[in-house]
Image (cartoon, rainbow, N blue to C red; front, top):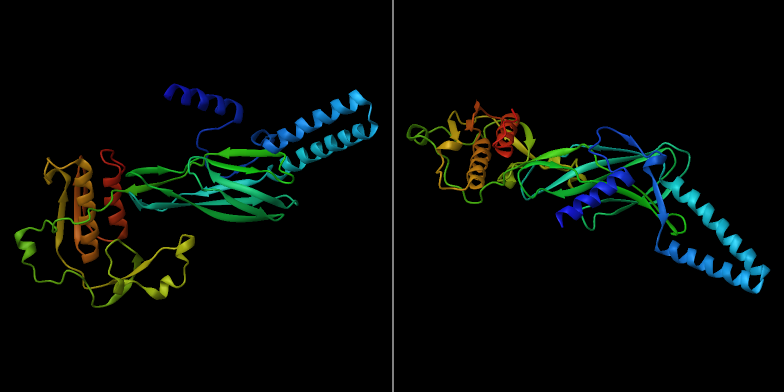
Length: 328
């Protein structure tokens, strides 16, 4: 089965130019658009053959005329189906990082630089059933759409291959093209649901300083798993539409703890699975950030100095996501 899949992929790359990931904007030139009869088109061709044989055997001039008229209609349809897809411009953006098990959002832009309106364009991910989206695009205009891809495991999550096709105008032909954008996002380990308490030293556990700063408003930051509802900044959330990729926003206060938390992958029990240890570290990082604590991370040969903030949190979570690779 694996050999058959490999042979099929090789044939598709040779015949349909299914290239490796392509960065930047691409244009659907003539060699990238393929046109073949649809199921309805095959039946239409059979009908033309039957009509031609009938006209030949019985010398029916009217049937000859009808046959040639339908052949002309088919040829005009070929031109319009190809032209409905050709020379569109496609581009994509990298998705925002997510946790394993969550859904990453990739944004696609389709541009129509010609003076022709494009109708009934179907954009889909070839390996995601039910992902098809129908698009109508007016002349010299562009549109944006979003594809949701589930991050099944931690690490880099590449964008799947896209397919753009159309059956316009009569449905007798199918014109299509495929594209693999050079876009990816990062999937952090899923946080442990019920992690142990933070591994504070005895001196840190006895610290009387508050663990969460709630004194003075210092700004906003992206929502993090575990943030209480009272900490959400509803004024900022109201300005974005979360259904089209907007993110939730939490308030951030000064008065944060002066404690420093030291996290190390090697200090966790070796009897635990690697993924369990990474998930535990992930949950501790999120908890420390929520409390406003400074924290450091040591994993493999990588050491990240103590700090706090969104950039530091992303750096630590990225190290967990790419373990045992060293991305930083």
